[in-house]
Image 1 (cartoon, rainbow, N blue to C red):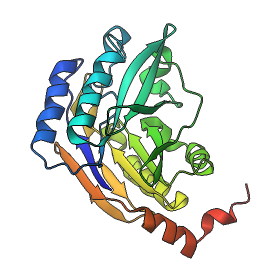
Image 2 (cartoon, rainbow, N blue to C red):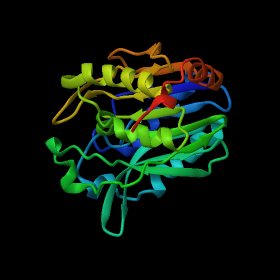
Image 3 (cartoon, rainbow, N blue to C red):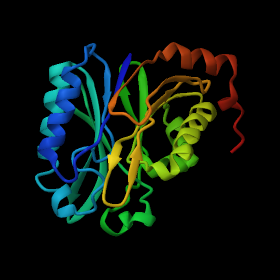
Image 4 (spheres, helix red, strand yellow):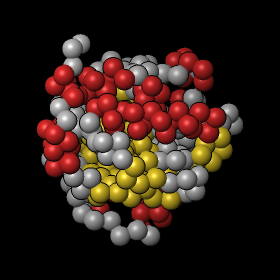
Length: 253
């Protein structure tokens, strides 16, 4: 399966502009059908904590945009939004199928207190997995990457592909790169990390979106530039490596 990760600089709290930028980037690329297209965390607004703006008209507004993309490109789409349910706001990832159907969502479990996110968003409580072609995909959002036990829960649910969407700041970008690789190695799974670029009022972002294979091999990587992360993933590679080196079967706890 082909993977396309959209690494760009979202304009602060300007949804329509950011939709147009994503469309522009995809239109310039030849997208294979039945691919996986991944957008960063809160891609439509940037990492704003103003929930009056981020959750406004959601989930309808951003879901409609993603549905149109999934149908146009006949591909799976993952993207991050802020959604309000019962007066609570969730930092949420949604996944749509090539026919525009929502096949699942995931609410960020680990909210980063250093930014005050825990004051405005409600933490999720469940690890989720989605079936995408031959892959069992476990979604992860940004700060979640630091907690390996969440990945193990994904493994226990059959995951062989992890997708991490993020607004990960430049100040800790080496952690991002090393943790993505470590999670691929220790879980013998593909790990796709899609980060953003640019500036916000509180943070500088330097991209470095990456794809790692189940042995920790670097399949694809971007730098600080706006661009599309591209790679090819094969379920057979996961199956073979887990058979040849069955480390997961040797878990004691």
